[in-house]
Length: 216
Image 1 (spheres, rainbow, N blue to C red):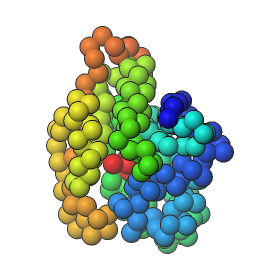
Image 2: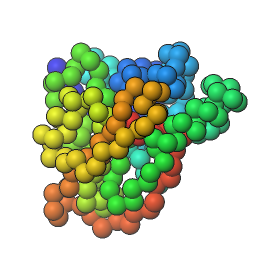
Image 3: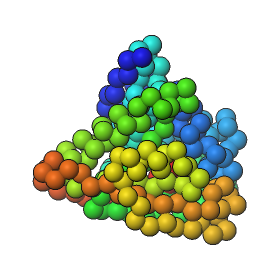
Image 4: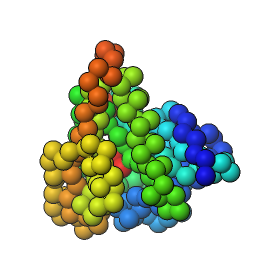
């Protein structure tokens, strides 16, 4: 099957994008952003087409997404207003506070990947590697020398892919009592240097914190 990678997300693909993202990360975020119908409404509302790459099959279906974070925001971040509009004032407030603990850290020196997901039927076919290649190019164009992502404790399949791509683990963080909410006990930060001489010299600005943390 032919796969096309393009920058951005077509408006008509937003419902598919929300389902794909929730399919990938609902296991981690389900107790915080569920039930499913609200989570889908939330992500369809907040995902940013200007901060992602899309993988589309030859039938026009969305089969993969790769988001990233910039000084202008993050792919699946949203805001406090988005949370309260979907979950109510009280529900939005506690959800925002909990999610902030995942996304509070800012890395100004490395390009931040904000979630990669591939449809189950298309995993193991190289789609994830194609999306990563697009992210490497984006990082280089923005003047970064390395890219960074975070992977949760039990996502061995994703970690194996990242290691094959040259990512190295630099630290592991324990969630403590929040593991009961998120369903995983720790996450590992992984970094991949870009090839020397590829990255440009554009200035970098600090990234802003978002209500929803980076997808892992």
